[in-house]
Image (tube, rainbow, N blue to C red; front, side, top):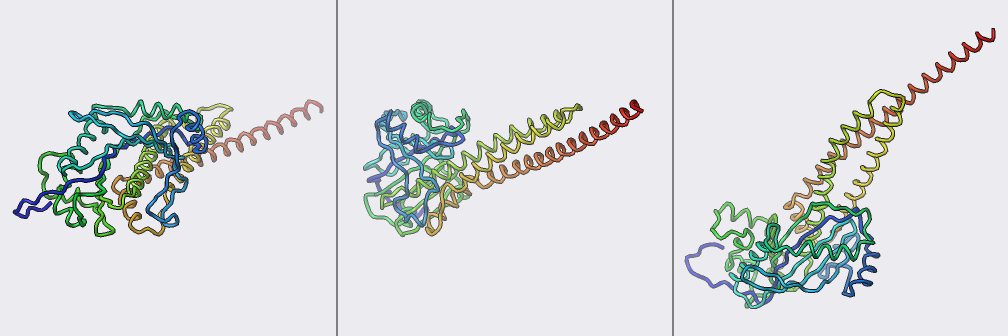
Length: 377
């Protein structure tokens, strides 16, 4: 917010909310239809398939619409503030569960709304003192356990905070909003004033489509001003976080796999008549790993398909860049290439070893035949 030399009162938030997201990698895949059936049988609360309500289906659509589950609200303590949080769980077919805790805000001065966002981050964020996430995740997982394909106890998680305003106490354009409101404390969580380069960097990913909407993205937080009340931008940011989580999970999996692969390759080269079988067994294992990771990464890449909506496409692309999804994805591709090359080399060695073994067997059979002929003679 520029310093104009005159104090201008910040508007009050008439309607808005702060949502903390925590995303978990729980399985290789999730059968959403089965999860929906299990949830209906045991939880008795509503479920639905997610869709982008403010955008035509042909412009932006989910490849496989995730399943949204509604849980009972829970009380949370945000330092001195006692609040009630609405709870949702969104289930993605590529094995991710995204939990959301939403705290409503009504008729609050802007400073109080900004402070609320920082309280939510401080107490139920990644380093928060309150941690309802594990118990909520345990409940969801217990109820949909039968729908999990190759469950995992992966420790990789992602967090994100979204502060959304649907209405101020006066009508504001995006330009007027940025003039009247200092977004920096909300986006940074810092109480001290930041330097001008730091402020510009935080506001670099600012996007508007109409004159009265605004989205500002950072690495771990976002501010959304959406007077029409739809949640499309927040949904797109959640998908980008889910993609980041899966790419990170597979990046760590491959990081752990590469040293083991090198050790196993050395073991296969031990002398012995079972060498070809060892080569072939390790090649088959690597081929299976590459096939599984490739299939998952393709499903993750295609989770959201943006065609005609230029605004959401720009936000989605900006989120992927801001979260460094493409960099992690490129790292996964490089490691998959190493494993593919190793698989090809092992396959060639297995073929060569078999060919060598066959040659020795032919020589041995010829020698045996010659020996028998000499004995008969």
